[in-house]
Image 1 (tube, rainbow, N blue to C red):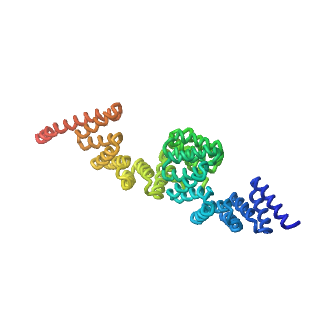
Image 2 (image 1 turned 90 degrees about the vertical axis):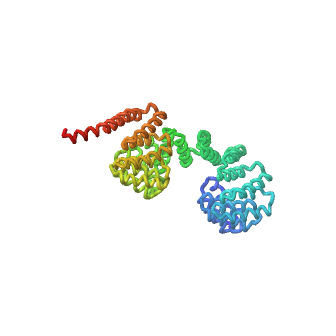
Image 3 (image 1 turned 180 degrees about the vertical axis):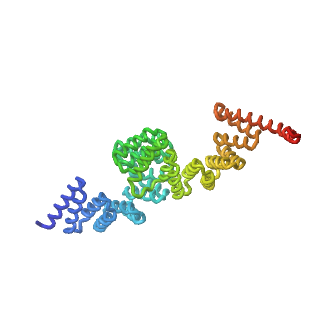
Length: 451
């Protein structure tokens, strides 16, 4: 068989295999064809496309470069090379290619369109907008331009304009992949969760097996407070991918919120067994929280100490650690944990309150009172801090201050049973203190007279 004829047949076979997405087999056929005739630019470009499908980006760039070297004036080959180089992070070289393309073909809209994406990725948003308007002058109906411009706007948190751009994409090309997800993410960033859910569901209908997409939807449902629905969605992801670590972890967090620490711990342990080197924010702290709720205090303390060592700024883990140590009868160690929180956030009301509890348990009522008052100043409706402050005032025999704070607390919550009981105790304490002061001189006189 003639070599040239064989090469043509190999290329035809490669095309058929590509249509069937048999990429490796198609690549093998093209390689044989190019070994016979290495000077065919179209074949090199086809090879670059196949390598892209195989995620072999370096080799794809080489193939497109070979095609461009053979056909330096071909616009589509230049665009393909520029896109792959941008994906590889070689933005400067990609921009050079598109700038040269625009110089040679000033009316070629893709030379501007693709630069919007690169400039947006580089954070050079003014240049991205300039390219967008230049592209619009040539073609007002390019969905890619609106998609890239939306990405630039979202990066600057200009979500309303980004959503407008992405909705224009849907008007121009309803099947555009990924745009519903971008709109959903923008609405979610704005806190408009109902609108976000609608667009997430549209994207899920197009790709129901995308576990990453489903995970975003489940997280957003959890944010909206629909814990049962979120748990069902995480369970659906686990059915699709039993090793999906993030879903096991998130399901465990929901179990904690629903007061199911045993189930939460099981989810966390499954997540840990599914990954050799788990790296999830707050993982040890959540295990510690589950163990704490289960009353396994020594194990909980160990996990929470590891969480605090891993991230010394994790105030939630430090609060849990302090609570655990306080429950274990270690108010001194617990106080250290709460002080570490206050070193990070001096107005952390919860840390001030729990530090006050530690100090009062150590008999340091005046110092505890100061932290309670700080907590109340930071968070005026924080009833546990107000209640503990009143108790501290009583211990210090500061009746007027105790009464004043109690009246304020009862105005906020007149039916609170603990506060109502405390009102009765305040009357009793004041009476007892008054009687003690009244009877002390009489007792001393009787003692001196021998009675």
